[in-house]
Length: 472
Image (cartoon, rainbow, N blue to C red; front, side):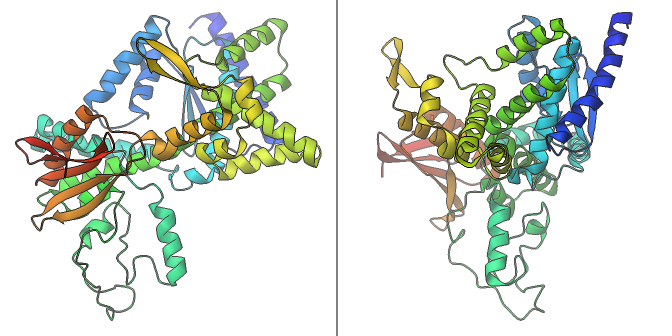
């Protein structure tokens, strides 16, 4: 390690506590922080896997190769990676300049504040997430030793093909249901527990464990009684012939998706919040003239709008600053800061955009809708309300199509009938047909998916050997 690098590390070690103190004065509330400086190979491995420790899969290797190649050719760069955990781990890229690491550290503090205080992260269990993922990875390695790597990897492929089809709000719905009925969760109702194993091993129980066995559960004539959005959970409960190790893999991948889901729900808010605060924290630091110039250039690069996609750093920052300015003007100085802290706590990207993206901001940021017409990409809409509504609609269910289970015993033959909740956006047919193959392997019986093509109902099926499509 060179003397210059050593001096910069000492300077960074002095700067981080100063930034923490500034952040606390601004009333940011974050978990205990752990900072580590890592070489690019480690940072991009973490970025590809989404965590420092996780099960191995070929798709993560593919992501690593793509991201690392872009870094090597100076096409893109990950300056840091922060983990929603308690304590919170932040990994800084080796090769960052001192001022880059200072800005990144300030940025990370605000991310951690967001993780800790936004309500959508309240079920993510940050205390032991890293350890639990490491333990799961070890279990998966044992499954590969027992059952063979190809078999286990093929099963993970099947599960990953539908890993986004979960119900992230199940916790809230079941808690509200139990409050409404005055009964303990799962008591005398058809609601199932959502812990990884309780809702599997107790499926055959007919009597209520909380009220002494005096309430026999009524068997439904249809499974599920109502359309079920959590496809992974439904397969865990009702698919036949799945072994214990397979149930564990489904449960683990579902739990991990529930952990990552809030990050997808709040991308614009989270990055905007972190950008808003790194700017203010860095302004409080005693920077040299050269450092101030370097910081200004780096910050400008972070918030530079993109011509063909939304820059969440830019949009989120502009929205928080606009809200603060408008509330201060209407309700008095300080009201704006109080308002953005309230928004940080209770909103996600959908409610954030729907409630606070204004006509003036859409025009200032030159937001528009475009599509390919012939061989050219053309702007097709600049009306601010339509632009806002399109952004909101594109983020519904984190941008994934909503698929529900309509019938787990279709035609009384144990077949699985799924339905796409069509909202004027068709499914990718090639992707649909490939995914049905994976779902059939999980269900081990024919599967069907109802959707719409050219606004006409279409039914896609796969029986394990061949697929079909018909228009009922």
